[in-house]
Length: 106
Length: 118
Picture 1 (cartoon, rainbow over the protein chains, first blue to last red):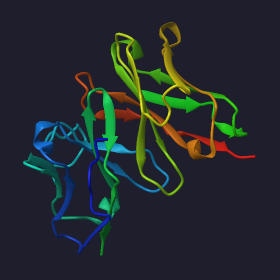
Picture 2 (picture 1 turned 30 degrees about the horizontal axis):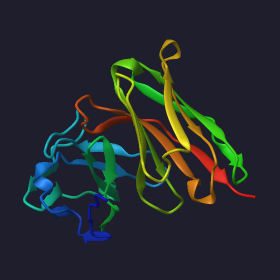
Picture 3 (picture 1 turned 180 degrees about the horizontal axis):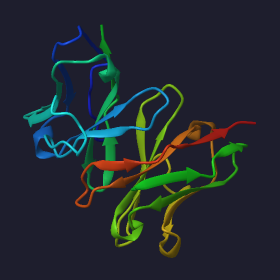
Picture 4 (picture 1 turned 180 degrees about the vertical axis):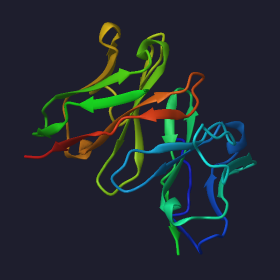
């Protein structure tokens, strides 16, 4: 089965840059989408098709996808960015989510 | 305003059935791809099912043969019929609009909770 690997957690200080990875052999051949989920809330799409931001998502959120790793980058991290983040791809009409990464902003 | 509202969750015994509804407003479900995603307590997101604008349907292996996704175009509503429920199906179920071209899921409902327990 198709699996995506994410780190369980990432911690950083306020104002630093967070990088959350999503790994799978040749993931660059897929379009990767990223979701933010805060406790008790529905997920929110923050990046689609590797590096595109939906309207309303701050420019601090960006994405890249190369080789075996896709990366969500959050610049100048704020306390409000604390959340779980999930990567997602489509594999022949089947959706696949990564296991999720808990981002902590200290 | 573009919005999705799920309903139909509840407590059901193992082996039972439940039908979830996802009512859309602000857009037409039949012109879009619609997805169900679930999240077990304390766990990550799990993709469940997809229905294309053309009507084609797809399922995760964990629910194939037990769940059926459908839509009622005049009600602008998507459904998830869940049969032969097990404890492992306990989760919050979200419906989401999937951007055409199988892109990201850009609109999500608030979720409805399904609890399977005896």
